[in-house]
Length: 267
Image (cartoon, rainbow, N blue to C red; front, side, top):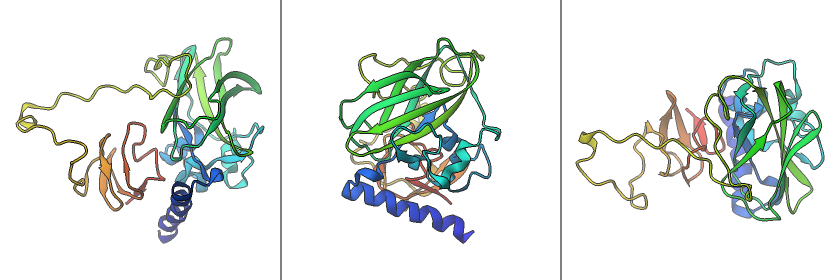
């Protein structure tokens, strides 16, 4: 058990270093939905993934590869097509949502199926948002397909790699049964839309909401919420599990604890 806890802490040191010193080689990011293979491992939906389950954002390798693992032997499990990777049912287009735990200047984002590039988005060296969305047409493809998503960093020779398994033409559209989130055609990094939060019960509306800038630190064990300032050591619950904050941050949708183990440690 101690080994399981210590390993993420080692990974945290690397992440913290990237945030403090801006090391270009330490930028991090991964596709959260439809869930990439590393996201499925981090969520526990695929077992025996090894190290990648603790750092789904770290699949980095030289540019130009066509490998789910980015040529990294530590994450070789991601290249194993014989494993039962769940495939998300989508329609003729899909919106890929990225979570970036370190935002680094970006040249391009690319998407491939079977070695054929099906979409590319040029950021021109700009720094992306903390979340990035791309709507990609899947016209001409059907059935089970593996999409390789590539984030090319502008000022290094490296890129980040993700493989996403899809069932094209399955029931529903977009991302696993929900309609795809539209994205502006001239930008590669809109913030993904989310379902509006439910209206609070009358009993919860007796006092005005506390400003996000003055909200007190979360009480240990309260439910995770977006647009909340969390500090190192704070404990929240999400999807029936408890997580402890590893890096101070203001939460946003797509940074739920189950998807961002660089920010949250299961306890």
